[in-house]
Amino acid sequence: MAFGVPELDRLFADGSLRLASLHEVVGMQSRDSGAVSGFVMALLKRIANLRPGPVLWVAAPDATREAGVVHGPGLVRFGLDAQRVMAVFPHRLEEALWVLEEGASCPALAAVWGDIQGRHRALDLTATRRLLLRAQASGVPVLLARHGTVDEPTAALTRFCIAPKPSLPPGLLAHGPHDGLGRAGWQVDVTRNRDGRPGQADVEWDHATGQFVAPARSIALVSRPAGGPDPAAAERRRPAHAWPQGTGR
Image (cartoon, rainbow, N blue to C red; front, top):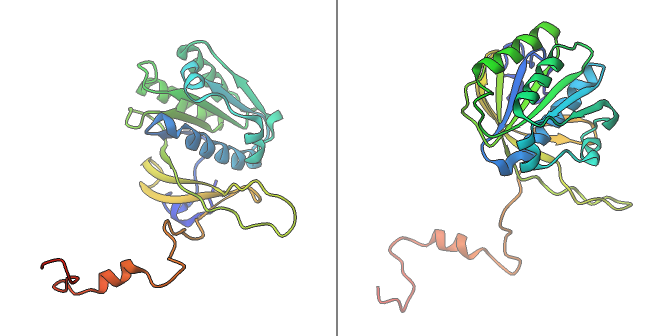
């Protein structure tokens, strides 16, 4: 699956992400769980266009307590049919890992999405390797969202470290109301890539087309003064030895 963003696609050997494997999407802080989940949903939308069948979502108990559950209208906004999403809420992490392995072995699924919060001894290198091997054997993409952790050992093919990126407000519509929300945006740091090389990119999600896009432009954080020239610019042009009168220097 190609992202359609050159800065990301060129990180992979053949210009696209190999789906039949384990991929981790991680956030350094728990407060970034919304950005992590949004990026996963964008990936799932692209995968669902390529693969038939339902998406299996497995949410470990710690993940739902910390970040809540996915909102149905949010799935729809990312273009995912909520009727294609099967949700499983295990009581223990060990049960969640078992469900993830069973899902990764089922070729009738479009993809498997796991939500894990923090560091866990049970989710070690051996556990991720089991998920990797099952995904490779069945061809089912497994996306493991890990909230509040970054540097844990993993056998995943790729690891995407996600942070939220400010987005531009949408242009005003000529007719009718709009919700005032800009595109979802992320700072993507590919820290592990066994199919290419690491790298970074800023990407946004176009809800109308269901595509990843590169940010069109940046927005100024401080506007220019409306009543005259910028005094800061004038100060920068002042010679270093020229001091205002009355300062005693």
